[in-house]
Length: 412
Image (cartoon, rainbow, N blue to C red):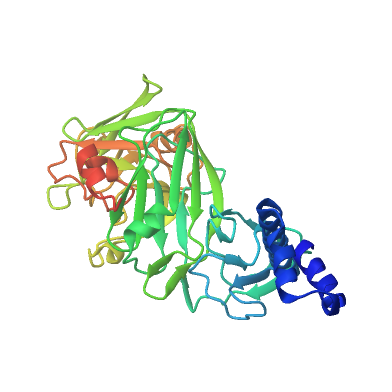
């Protein structure tokens, strides 16, 4: 460079020059040249410093951290997976469980942090594959712990079954639920054709879903149970993650008028049959209201002691019995009463009886015909019984609640 170069020469010739002469020579150098010389030296130093800093930055390696940490064997499953990087940016993150499922997630704006959209599942081994810009892929693994106590929900109707238009989706849990909102939010019930479907809690262990009015004939219903790792109550987690489908068949609604002792059956809006019946007597009145057939038996034993009536009866082979309430109300065949009773007297202990034959194989009798025309989920309406309306929780009988009252029972 200019100035140092001249200084070197002056040292070589110092014996032939005076101090005054030397200053004179230096003073004769144009100002611009001097400034240029000094300026050129400063720019070179700046460029050198920048190059040095860039070289140092280039030698830094991106440091990746995964939470839960690599090798963790009992990782928490109630928080999302998180990946961070220092001295770099993230280009890709993939989280895969040993069940084949992947966890999706999002990067922050600077792409230095990735967070999974959902928490990992319990009892699952995960592999996390991460790449930072310009670096090789790095792999971490962890295994989540299993929950200490669990619950499941048993659902009605059966998967892939076909039911009548009154069938709600009813879920009974094996453990009392205190966080009802979390559990209800994890369950979806959708219908095709589409209709609003709302849940209603009956106590701490039962959640039913229904639309405002009966399902339309031909509806397909899908129940989504996203309960896995949902905390229903402190320390108790769901274990189900599945979708099931149900179908609604034709519409059949039967109305029992115990003032006239007649039952009228309507199929898809058309009356198909009228049967004479007998209902509960004055001491054992039949529940009134809207009821749904929840169980069906070609023959079954009915014992009075099971419904709090002591030893008044014990019939081993009641034909064509269809349950209407949990407490023991059925519509069923009756072979032991005189045929003159049906259509003229209410003589039962609370059930609705139709004339039938012992053995349940006589296709000519009313009990047989009604049973054969019915299915789970069919609606049976009882009126003029002299009894109060059935409790909506007594069987699958939530239709006795107004839509406003039904929606008020949701936790969401």
